[in-house]
Amino acid sequence: MFDPKVTKWARIALSDPGYFTDVIRRKSRKALALDRRFGGGRSFGPSGLVMTLTWRCNLRCQMCDQYGDDYKQPLSKLTREDELELSEWQRVVDETFKYRCEYNLFGGEPLLFDGAVDLIRHIKAKGRRCSITTNGTLLDRYGEDIVTSGLDAMGVSVDGPPDVHDEIRGSDGSFERISKGIRQVKAWREKHGTRTPRIHINSVVTLWNHDRMLEMVELARELGVDGLTFQHLNFLEPRTMHSHMDYFRKRFQYDWPTREKDLGFLDTSGFDADVIHEQVTKIRKLEGLPISFLPDLTTREEIHGYYHDIDFKFQESSCVNPWIHVTINPKGVVTPCMEYPVGNVRDADFASIWNGEVFRSFRSELKQQGLFPGYCQRCCHRRFKSTKGVIAARYM
Image (cartoon, rainbow, N blue to C red; front, top):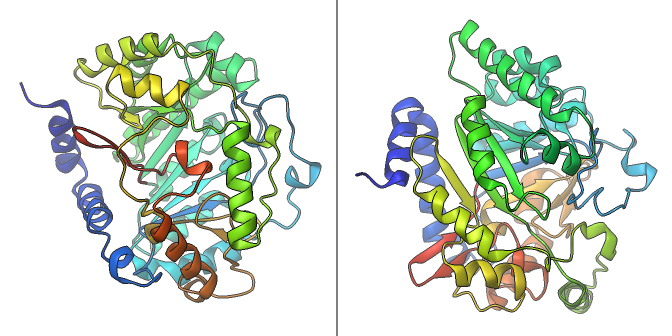
């Protein structure tokens, strides 16, 4: 019997050789990390660029770091005020496509941005790969335009059966809208004779669904999607949050503008790590649907440590994310991670920001420290290691 991961990548290589080649290139660059090792804070260029088109969203997910935990963002973040225009995003693409990076449209809910489909078309006209992360509730409205735009991949957030999903997402009927939208996108793909966009379900493991992961697998199969990823919750707790804030205030003279409630879910004591481990073990033995975990926690010790011991000593290598990935928020602020601003695309061209003094200083400090205190302990971009080697490294 072949290793499921080998089978998964063989299938991808045959069905989408361009994507397979890009993944190999990105993984190789991340593993070698030549610019991190020898660049003095400089980078060759991003391999992944996240474009947060809007903070606006039509759902209120309980674990969300923008709207969750009974907290609502200030009204200023719920409006179109100060959002980059389509033409500004297109200029960003014009300045960055030379890096051969992959673009991910993000939010909020990115399909609430009026020019989302036009931006996809602009990216594809430049010959670059593009994906979108969406809650799926607007696919029935924009699905055919998305299919004909040339979009490569679509990550749709689904957290469980209808009752569980709707409770987590804070909207009755959202599961039905999503499932209808996914089926319509598949029908439009068939109509237009294309395999893209590949539809991948992202399912965040939370208090409300961590005991129903096996059901999520069956749902993904019923929907006929191309893959499923279980995302372990990224979280902080007050002590680690304050250590992070203190460090950034001292080292970078930066006050992190985030309060405890802004961080969404903080308390992980209700997670039954044994239940999660039991399900993960069973899911790994399943065949057919490509399934992955982020981070790829394997053993009972790792899962218990992840959720119940914030100081659990994973054997880890240093973070390379700021050398290869970057996010631009709706107001044009460029940030490597943790909302730390290194420039604004409204004030300067991307190249001058990417290897500018502020970004170089941030990278150099991270290289020296390995990981920053606090936030890095459960970051989705962090690389974890077990005795078997790297067990988690998020990439686009």
